[in-house]
Length: 270
Image 1: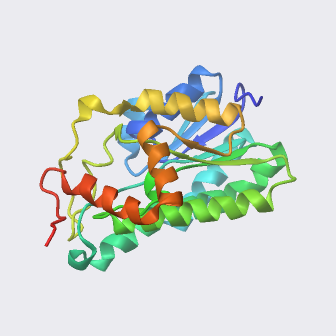
Image 2: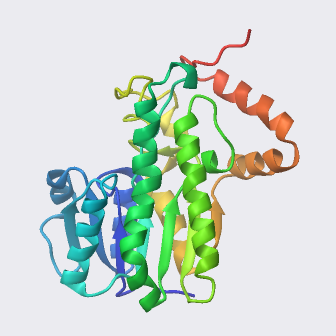
């Protein structure tokens, strides 16, 4: 059992949704928490001024220099990092044939490279303290989802990176974990990119039926403390991973039919 009490926990993308809930849960557990986001004003509204237990800094994880500066600032304040939760991410919804390639590049820069940059600058500190590195991924990291090619690619890349890193760090005392929430009531779909990179501004899902960010965060924090390898959070998610592994052709049809039923779905059968 690994306790985050008194540990320094870093959460990227903490200005809303799962990131905000993760920071709150870590604080409740007695951790010191460092958060970043692209809107420092919003972070200050949510977390208040810097204190003995909270540190906020503006950082765009798609920029290596921002990630290094964020990690350096945490070390300057507390002298250590124990847990890094790579949560920052964006999504998309558009057919690949209609999508501007800049959209996919942006998703890779934030979802994949953001994880790589933050991990690269924090990893030596985490190894020193035998802590944890976490990636908030998706079922899209196990099974490519139609209309979300860039998102799926970025999450596959994240999981491959973390799996390789976990193996490299196997005997260091560091736990590397990636988690796949189900559809969660967060802001990520409302700011998901459309085919030309503009923000969708709405979601095709019924938010009232989705897992709450708070529930998702509690599962992730519990996974960190129990040193889990991976977590797939929902029954539908577990079934999707299982079917895709054993019956990939069937999974193609089931996934297509599921997403074709979305409101204003771009998928159309001939």
